[in-house]
Image 1 (cartoon, rainbow, N blue to C red):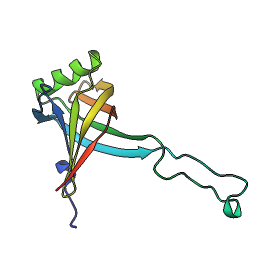
Image 2: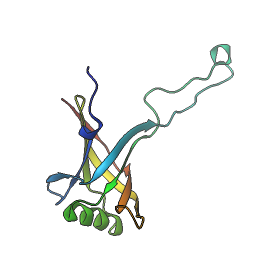
Image 3: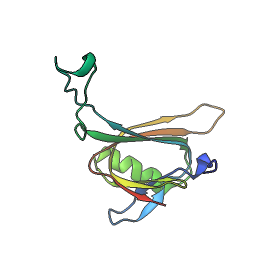
Length: 137
């Protein structure tokens, strides 16, 4: 697989709750992280004293983050709305030449910043709030 453009990793937000996804405008940097908790089942009988983990157990989670500049009033307003209303809408993350991850996420933080001689910026962090699906390209 050839190298991919970072700008092609997109975060899309369901704008209406009916599957109408739009790219969150103005993002300059995006990131998705997948995690799973391990379940330690090590005992005195563990071979050589090595830790043993229980396969298929533990809580899975994902987190999304992004930062950028204000460019689109609709997606900016929707992000604020879901934060203040504590909604858990569906998001899509487009991973170039890999696939699409989709599912419910909670907006866990939103930060705004700006300086007197620069543009206004924002940062978003989201945590998975249910089962995610993956569709390969």
